[in-house]
Every structure is written in C-alpha cells, then in structure tokens.
Image 1 (cartoon, helix red, strand yellow):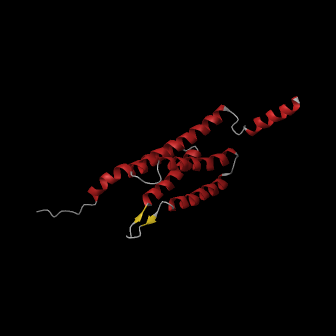
Image 2 (spheres, helix red, strand yellow):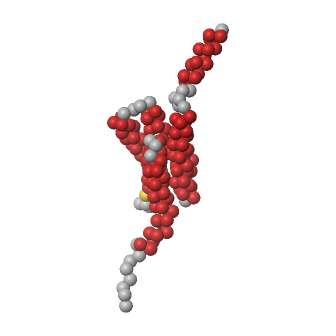
Image 3 (cartoon, one colour):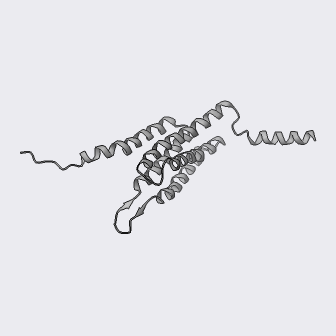
Length: 166
C-alpha cells in the first residue's frame, strides 16, 4: 500500500512541476499579474465610457494572450513557431473585437471601433508581458492611455478651422 501512495505523490509532484524553481514561479506570476493590471487600466477607461468590454474583459484578454505565449515559451517552442502562435492570437482576437462593432439600424454610424481596437491592443500588450517584454508592455499601455484619456481633450482644439485674421 505504501508503494501505491508513493506512486500517487510522485505523479502529483510530476504533474505540478511545470515551474521547477522559485525564480520560474516569480517570472510567471510577474508576467501574468502585469498583463492583468495593464489590461485593467485599459478596460477601466472603456468601462468609464459605458462600453460593454470593460475591466474584466480587458484583463482576461491580456492574461489569455500572455498565457498563449508564456506556456509555449516554457516548453521551448522555437521563435519561428512562436510567430505562428502570435499570428493565431492576432487573428482570433479580431473575432472578439468584431463582436464589439455594430452599425445602427437607423443611422449609418458605426460604433465600437475604439473598443475593438482597444481589445486588439490589449492582446498585444498581453503578448508582450507574456514574452517578458515588460517595459514594452508598460510603454504601449501608457501610449494607449494617452490616446484614450488625453487625446479626446486635445483633439477638438486641433480640428478647429483657421480663423481669418482681421
């Protein structure tokens, strides 16, 4: 009976050994937490604007994208194969973004393009975080926040027609 329990514990240890040391564990935690936090920042803005894709959606997109590149990196997928993984994420996330775009029945106005673009960018930020490109992910998030929060305040002043000088 003792050998049966030994086999069970050995199997359980083997099953949970995808992160062999504390450094690897820390690396995975940092990448996933960073992806989630950066996604939350972008989702917060969308949520404040009353859009369907808010904090939770953006967090899940960022973390999911990070996972899709983090796990293959852990098992040693080659850079050439990783490009195919990224390609799949980019194409797949397009379908999610497309779900946020709609055209009104009574108008010819299209809505949801900014949210769809935000979801697409959130996936890219998650990919960067998952691949250990933390600074790149943070910079992209800061640029996106500038576009989403500050650009709407500045843009009306940039689009003004020139006044005729007397």
